[in-house]
Image (cartoon, rainbow, N blue to C red; front, side, top):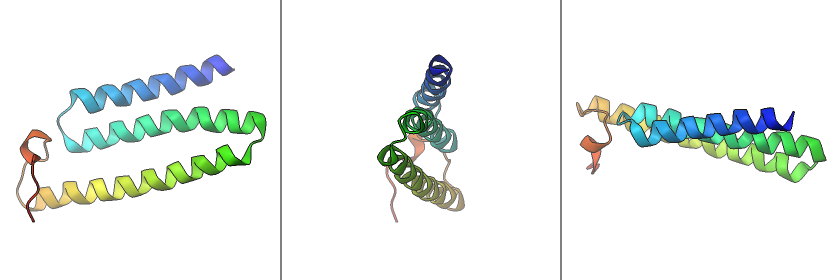
Length: 98
């Protein structure tokens, strides 16, 4: 069972890393970050449940809350750039002027 958990987690993490590194669209980069967070949370939940450690499961909840905030801020920035008529690509948005 442990190999399956590590396999799925590593697949999600490295898929997210590849998306962040190789893609230029901001929405896909945000998706890649969320995949990386999901990959680490799978391992943390597995070992937290295996050892019945409430501290690890509390850390997972904290990570999920931070990931939700990151998604909200990222989507707000992407929508703002779209409304201003800018391309939602990372190289086009080197500098945000507001």
